[in-house]
Amino acid sequence: YRNVFDASNLNISGDVILDLKDYYEIIGDIEGKHIYEINSRKLSNELERNPYVKAARVSKHYPCKINIDIVEREPIAIINNKKKFLIDSEAIILPNRNSFFESALIPMLSGFNPANDLYPEGNATFSIKVREAVEILDFIQQNFNKFFNEISELTINKDDEFEIILSEQPTRVILGKSD
Image 1 (tube, rainbow, N blue to C red):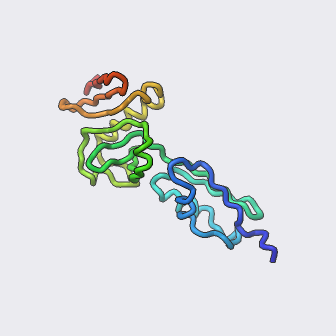
Image 2: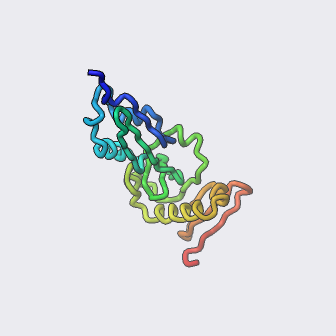
Image 3: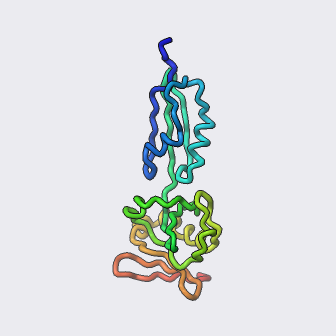
């Protein structure tokens, strides 16, 4: 009668790349539903189907509050092909969001196989060289963050060696095949 258990208080935290409206679209309309009718696991799984969502935790706080904590995938590089792709540290291809390309200060990966079928959105890339490049960038980001921020591009040269190009005074750092 008093609608005490209506899920009227929804709190979403942790969003960075996706907007709140994107999350509300995934969640759907919960207005008028009782809090005990909402399946936390199902809602969490639906959120995690989005390629940008790495993890989602849904918790109920009776009588009427639902908290959703989101951990999003953070792009580590942009794959510079005919069609640009974002890629995270786990080599997951993220869907194209033009607003992110305009403001991203992350390295470009260029010179890799341009076949678009190697880069399925929402899944790990099939390109072994791109995976190796992502591992290099992730290692640098984790251990030498200041250096990572100076990287403009990571490419493959004609000898199949990785080259890191820095933004300041375009310095080239060539990583050998064996050492």
